[in-house]
Length: 146
Image (cartoon, rainbow, N blue to C red; front, side, top):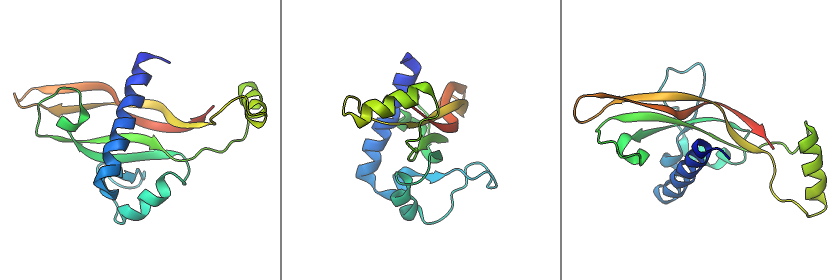
């Protein structure tokens, strides 16, 4: 796995761990194309319950820059987007067919993963009034893959 993907996965796991201790508001909300960027719809608690059971989709979470864990000093809040949800176990590739067979035999574990297929840069103003641009910080599109 590429170092960037490992870093992103680690960041997402950290966010999930922190979110479990903060309650439902830490999970954010699914991204809906019709809404302006950065707006959240009501009933976040209900979304939390559906997040893992629902289909793979893009979610957004308002996050203070300091909580990104990347060492930036800023009072700004950015919209961090990530992928979450379930993926069907249907095999669409040769790899998927083989993996499904091995899982059926108990020789392999796991299944298709909900993951970013495209990323977006995020920019913010730091405490020294300089623009900082973090490349490929947020997910821009999600898909299932095995």
